[in-house]
Length: 148
Image 1: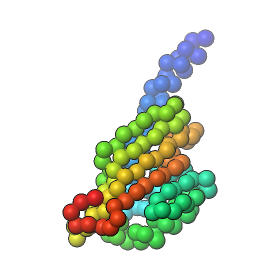
Image 2: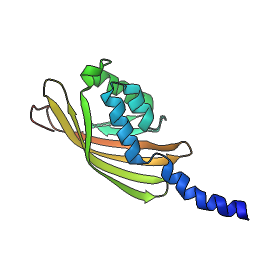
Image 3: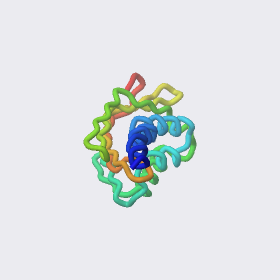
Image 4: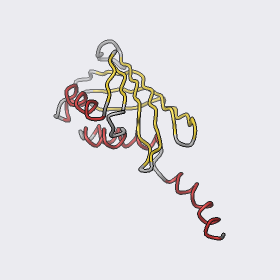
């Protein structure tokens, strides 16, 4: 009985210590800004053909398709990726295994050009940790030089 009680007391602390959705977004920003597209994708997204991405008026399914779209859009050169920032992020816990995360994204390139928009992410807690299972991202109509 003592071992059960000890586990029951330690379980909430262990869950709290595991990376949460906001921590994953921070790690994604760090990976993006380091020019590491693979770490950005693998560190946050569910690596499954069931991953869904709604963006640019299109629906995309699957981790591999999502990664290829990012590669096609931003290229292999880290300078082409710009500097990423997430703002106004809200994490809404739906239940212990699901969270809705919404906020604003902004990319800025060295020439001062920016793009930005809104995102809504659905995270699911798998045994290996939280992963994005659905991403709905909108963007401004065109890049601008003054903000996103």
